[in-house]
Length: 360
Image (cartoon, rainbow, N blue to C red; front, side, top):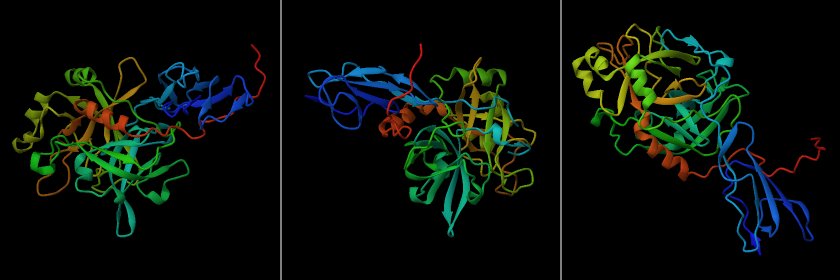
């Protein structure tokens, strides 16, 4: 009798030891395993325990003694907790990276051109705005992580550039025909990102969203990054980041032009300063993140959706609030898609044990 390989031990490093028989000792983990084989599991760096046991044994009936350990990337952490301040924002320094920041490139005229932002929420899943990828073919999009430049040729050695396998548009989204309601989409990457200190997912909010509600009530701050139009009406060549004040629905509605109020629904909220600092064309799809109270962990609560245009132009008007898609309204949908995608986890999961002597 044998046990099947532990394919459900998502993201965990596995070390397998046959406790008796002709193959007694350390054995490969990626094949069927004999009765009596013990598997030791641990989460690699940048991952944390999701569920299951760190030690399981193959029993005589061909089953495992306990559900095995599975691991998930640690979300919402960054090296620097300083809020570096797109229009009138500050250029991001390498040490102030937002590890979940994704930059979307489309293939046009033989070149890859920056067109929208996104947020990494799982190893193979990027959150963005529906209008960024409305009627877009997946094979024309690439996503870059760990970059500070809008020029893909200057991505740098720490960058990860991955093709898109498919696009999951929120079912209720109908672009301008429905006033950009449910302006949210997910990009499914062809391969998993490598989670490290430079690239890692942000945490998803809970539903109901108490943190956002509190921020709306008390004017809390969110952080948004992007490479969209700057105060000079030119696209930024580098990643910039700004803080934005989150405002109540009433305050936003009262401050907006009448013809723009149709974009404010129960699936959206507003943020900004009404003073020329904000997000603009090209920042669409980027995530607004809020730090959990009394914590260093960040959650994504908004997706840059729409903002009023300056009269007679197609340019944003940063003197008005920006409308963000409320992520907490869609967490069940997001999690359902994340769970349906095979989790690849970090490479080299089947490692030989440490041969060094252990002194205790």
